[in-house]
Length: 226
Image (cartoon, rainbow, N blue to C red; front, side, top):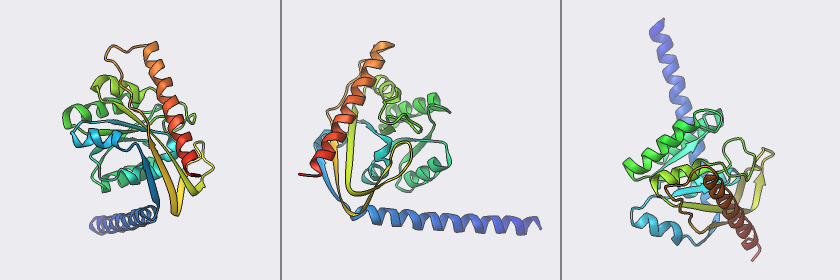
């Protein structure tokens, strides 16, 4: 009986993995039809080509397309430990990247430490949602700033906009570009965080990151109509 139950569970697990793989393939096919315009992309490629890690920061609303855009880039990416986060983690792993589970509310400090190690020990880029897994939307938390301080890797704020798109009714108004949508991604000026930044200095860099992410997002939305 136990052997039969194990075989049934194994078969169900295989079915789920197969269906998940099909779903991810369809998502990539969907998003690959989009027509991206990349503004100041050299701010990332210059670092990447020299093997220098960056802390790629974005708003949660831009997560879906940004994950697709950077798929396969050697990176450790912070994702929520929730059910939705587990799907993101599997998508990341599918493309050879490293998911790091954690959020401001659970395991955040450990996750930040793991991301710092990924930069120092493995030379990986870091991907992080600056407003976290629960928001408030477009309010930068300190995780990206601490990682940049400890690793001396620059923060690269990226804003994204798409048209036409579906915006979900979630707290962050997540953007899903529709097939063949125009997508604009704006790479803002990198932010270097000094090693001695503590206390109010960290808060200053949080505000700077927030301002540059909002500037990049506004510019991406403006360019959609030009």
